[in-house]
Image 1 (cartoon, rainbow, N blue to C red):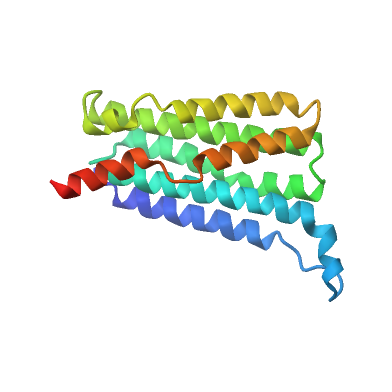
Image 2 (cartoon, rainbow, N blue to C red):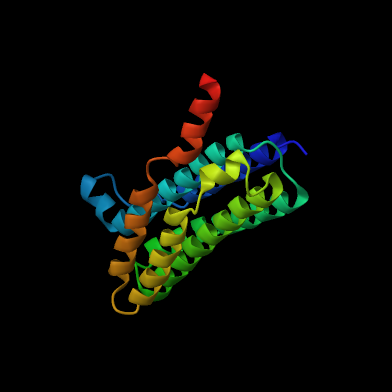
Amino acid sequence: MGKGRLEAFSDGVIAIIITIMVLELRIPDGGKLNSLWPLWPKFLSYILSFVYVAIYWNNHHHMMHAVQKVSGGVLWTNMLLLFWLSLIPFATAWMGENHFTLWPVVVYGLILMLSAIAYIILAHCLVSLHGKDSAFAQVLGNDYKGKLSVGIYAIAIGLSFIHPMISFALYALVAAMWFIPDRRFENRQTTSAEK
């Protein structure tokens, strides 16, 4: 089965997710610069979420270019990833609207963690399809960074009960870890192109 439709559909869903998030940003009351100040929690939530969605799009793009084919199982695990990503605008708006209070920050973290788990499941489904000895499996390796991210999300969710901003800082830390696209797949493409 070809991978083109999966990539096109995923790109479209991710574009809609970003559009929904930006539409949640409301125009401030008044025309003075200080009228922007009450919006800082919403804008900060938006920035972090935009970065996360961009990271997923970048890494998904690189991963899909490294595979040769997809299967029905891959299509469904990709849909699972898109499902969790589609909840990011809701959690972003809730967290920003409520100034990073406990439950919005916890729900935001759960959605991030479940998105990361879905991405790991998708990667492992692709390994199963291509074989454990395939070039894709070798490039993916043990995916320590993906597993570390899930662990940090779990810790951050627990720390939300101490102070939600600690969790927000840990969510930003994970985003910083992934800000540069996953070089494993990019390096494989460069090596393949040189041969």
